Image (cartoon, rainbow, N blue to C red; front, side):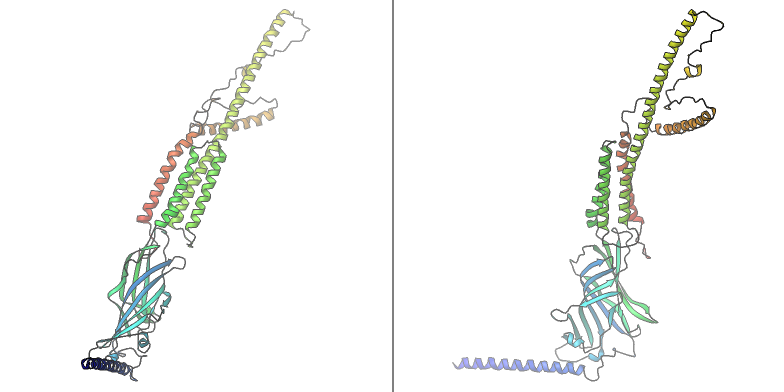
Length: 481
């Protein structure tokens, strides 16, 4: 019983002693911190004023990147931004303690760099559940602060190769008030790091480059800055699946018209109109969030696709024109055949009447007072006129009036020459009749047969050229390219 009482007394005494030591330790720390922030410390004055510039070392750990807005020309990032500097006025000596870790409240009472982002559009300090920032103070006066920020920064976009483009977005860091004679910024050995697994929906991060101790002129004074540049390459998977592949297949589907009946105009026109509307819809969807005044790579591809669909319409227009031309020529051929048959029939009848008249003339005695009967035989020039096989022109009767005959003769020659030249031109394509009354067996499908091979080959070559040009030759239009 006595032993138990002694043990309880010892444990209680030890606990009281420990609490007393903790209170004494806390009181000593408070005294040290209060002494550091005594009346002699002025947080408005930078460390080492009047001497060399204060060196501020920075590093940045990126928690997330994006989104990137092409229209607003901005990008966002969530970072832990850290700064270190020396303030010898805050040096201390405390047995057993080399560094104090303190909350943001201590930061409000000491001098710290007035760092800001030169190309920032806006930034937000995370404050849930308390402001996300702290500071560590080492015994030699070395301070390191950390703060979590979401930053929105300006990024000049070059979109001539969109969506095959790459972008360079920089974040420029410096002092708002102090010149390079007072503050010098540098990246430390850690520089800029990105947390493992960070990905962007729109881009891939190709590289991150940093620049230290750079000087820029603001107003009339030089200011020290540091810079980090993110090299982004756009992920093309979305555009391939949503625009390039569908619009390519739509163009290929326009070639179905080459297998339709050349004279089935309704089917061909309906197909082409549907394809044009589909391409327009895809084009508007692909460019809905992009408002630039110049043509991008996507615009040029859409123009190429429109051009090939338009060429399909032109091909059908040519077929329709040649069909009408051949129909008119066939009518001329039929009219010529009909007129020739009528003339031959009239010649035959006139010859028969002429023979009958001669027989009657032989039977009738000649009387001097009787009038002579005129012969009804066909004139030699008309009787001997034959319609050539290689002409498809209608024969016009001669007029009795000399004035009308002269005008008609001029018109007749002009008409013959014009139509003859037209026929010779189109006959060279082997799609017009090569003699009267017979069209080529394949007709106008000959053009479609050629188009079935020519259009796919031409489109494939054009798309390949497009890809090579934008992959190796056409740049984004940057000054540094």
